[in-house]
Length: 134
Image (cartoon, rainbow, N blue to C red; front, side):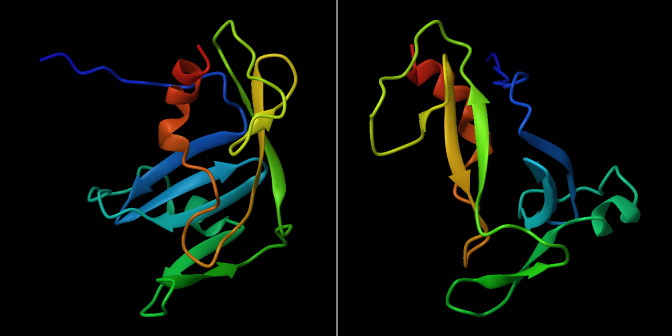
């Protein structure tokens, strides 16, 4: 069996910084967040200071939404992110639903903290966006 690792090295607006102890430390644009990740059962690689230096932490609770955001620094209600498609095709303008084109060969979308732990985009599927676009 061959395992294929799908990566998106050209995507500069997102970065998985670290993971462990049931959390993942991520950067979405200029904002850093710590969110739950049940599969991160190992110890984090970065020091605790890196985990404290975040804009927000999602706190799981018994609330209907599963928890709430503890915003520790100013975060706009929404912010724009870009994903540079690596395929040779450019998505059709005006296509919806979904991300809108961001110039030649890219996607542009809005992200925001939501009542759940999500921000409106799932970075783990980014490599598939290139495949979808041709």
